[in-house]
Amino acid sequence: MSKALDAQGKSYNRLMLVIVLLVGTFCTVLNQTILATAFPTLMKAFDISTSTVQWLTTGFLMVNGIMIPVSAWLSTRFNTKWLYISAMLIFEVGTILAWAAPSYSVLLSGRLIQAVGVGISMPLLQNIMLSIFPANKRGVAMGLAGVVIGVAPAIGPTLSGYIIDTWEWRYLFGMIIPIVALVIVLAFFFMKPVLKTAKSQIDWLSLCLSTVGFGALLYGFSSVGDKGWGSAIVLTSLIIGIVVISIFVWRQLKMEKPFLELRVFTSKEFTIATALSSIVMIAMVGVEMIVPLYLQMIHGMSAFNSGLLLLPGAVMMAVMSPITGQAFDRIGARRLAIAGLFLLTAGTLPFVVLTKSTPIIYIVFLYAVRMFGISMVMMPATTAGMNALSSQLISHGTAVNNTVRQIASSIGTAVLVSVLANVTKSQMPGKHLLTSEPLEYKVRALNATMAGYQGAFWVAVIFCIVGFVIAFFMKSSATHQKGVN
Amino acid sequence: MIIGLLVISAIAFFISFIYIDKMTTRLIATGIAGVILIISLFAIVANYHSHYGMEKVETVKTQQIYSADRTGRLDMLLFQPIGTAGKENVYIYSKHDDSKKLATHKQMSSQLVTLNSIMLTKLS
Image 1 (spheres, rainbow over the protein chains, first blue to last red):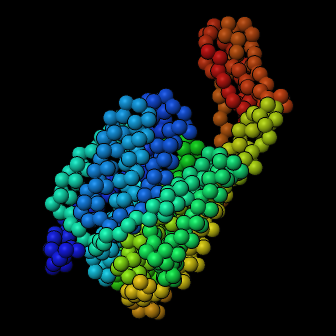
Image 2 (cartoon, each protein chain N blue to C red):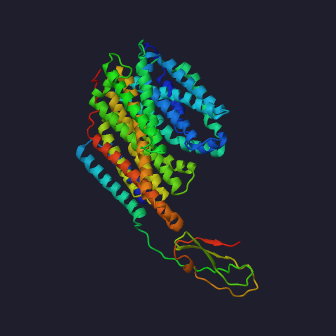
Image 3 (cartoon, rainbow over the protein chains, first blue to last red):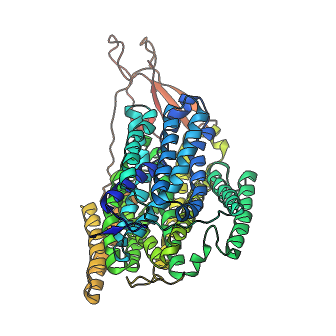
């Protein structure tokens, strides 16, 4: 810990750099989910429909996802200090725009500008954390990053519910502005160019392909919940996405100095780790969305209260993430992943037989057990994957890992929501019952909805079991390889 | 209590699997914690899914209800069928004795009214 040197060989204050980095990125990642409970308010404020208001999140996540592959090039090309400050400045501009928005279109523009900032800051955080700590301390460093990446999206809905109930929606953005302003000022003093950079040309064709490809894929999956798998829009955008990404992948593999280095997948350790962290992401994000729905639909809770009940789980993750990181540095990811996925699977199974009257206290604790398990897998597996790569490849590894995870989480959400919708629909009593015996209809409709939730949880359990099996393929040693270059 | 057991066994599982370095001790301790964890999960599910540990209690409550005709001239219980199958009805009656002059009102056991899932609405 004595002396930390940046890419130019100057010493710097690592603690302050980490604090500035974590606080700033926390503010940006928080915005992924902060509007979740604000939709009804915003619909009223701007007089817009549900499908319009959803663009504030869908568009955000799309731009976010598009920016992540670009971040690999950005972080190897530009001075880290100025890249971070620029990302935060872009984010601040977007936030101010959203805060002051007189109309929906300004609000949406603000959100999309914010998303550019988040798309850079999130992978940059992991990049920096992996670079400034020696390999045997990376677990703790990534554990801290995990607090930001895993916990910020989890507390977003609760925080926004609280702010909307107490003040008004503008404060969702307003409260972030001074914090980010302070982060920017501090970044001038404490952020340092810690990543090695080299002048390189950007391959514009690759940039276009990745933007169109990932954009179309993310759009397709995020529309499934709304339109269903059979919809022409969903199918067209998924096909476009897959075709364009295939061309993108082919081009990357042929290029000498690719835009996104996909050869990181030649490392078996990295591939397994990426698969594992993606599956855990699916299991986390999907259930994170289904459980509040269940609480609201079946138990009749408000969005804010249902978010509040999931808070202990999020806090659990915040507390555990640095602890599991430390454990990773000692024993490696294998045992952690096995233990975590055992707890995750065991904690998910009871959800399969959820009933209309399951006491809420059980749900809170079962959910916390799941998060306990997730905290042992997500960041340790990611770190193990990164440790398998040489240091020049880390920025590409982070970008690939984050992109795959982002797509996985959008697939996870789409699959769980469509299983929920389809099972519910197939069990729904016929409409004629509504006219002949309305009360009986009501009872059966509720049972159908319960069957839908149970179906969705079964899918989550299957993902957990697949992850559990994959965990056994991880390497057991904590020694750090530098395999592929 | 069962929640306490769940929390303790989950933490014990983590600690024994991660922090015990000796192989045999680790496997034994983890095994015990794992089994207790699974038992506590089973108990929780048994409790909310199969109502384990709960007793079936039947409560019959009789409540005095009063004529739907608030002038007090007629003793009547009105009902209106909902849905076309004729199996579900809404019964209409007074919940309170509005007219003190009439000494007697027909009393009706609520059991009769709650045969099926039926909504009770009051006239007022």
